Length: 270
Image 1: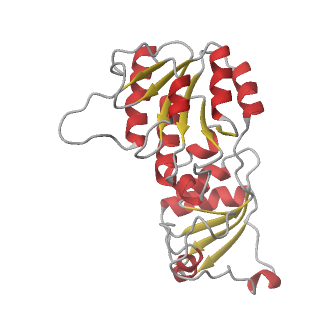
Image 2 (image 1 turned 30 degrees about the vertical axis):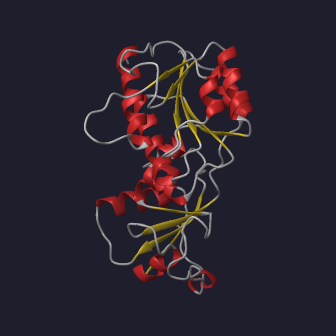
Image 3 (image 1 turned 45 degrees about the vertical axis):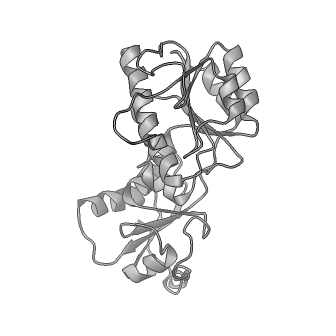
């Protein structure tokens, strides 16, 4: 761990007005133990500086400090109020880091990844998910299911925000997240590669549990409320639903992702 110079001692994190949206201030900040630890575990850590709440001494803090010391990253111990002012609406757990941005992949990187796979592709496509909590949860679930990449459009969808990194519990650092300018074109290219596109909708052709989810596969889920768009649905090879009981009309997209992905895992025998 590097020591603070006299110049550093006079430096304080920029205070932020209470009530501001954490997704719109300082996009170079990440928060929470899992998100920062995952960023530190990359071969070339993108973390530049870490602020820790004074007085916290436990196993999680000790592990984080050990990782920070390995990379010789500047650490500042500050009052918790300072952290609250930096990201007032965030559950930062007493730790915030400044880092280089985590950049999503593009179509070129997606197809390079597919070319290098030794097993049938297993993808998750999110058509316009705008809630960062949902995207973070989907990334966490997708990594747990062994998905090779998550694909989403650039427009009208959330990207890799503070909250996405926090909720994903490190999955956003490890699982390729691809943002594309033309989702319909990418869907056609995936089909040309022999990847079966299975969409989800409440008015579907059958249950996800009776669909064939083995082989090269991409599960396609829609945005909160409106589901997959008409053009996206037209590009799907098969559309399924999740059989439900009770009065609920639909599931949260991250819950639906878990059901569909792990049904595919069961069928694929992984």
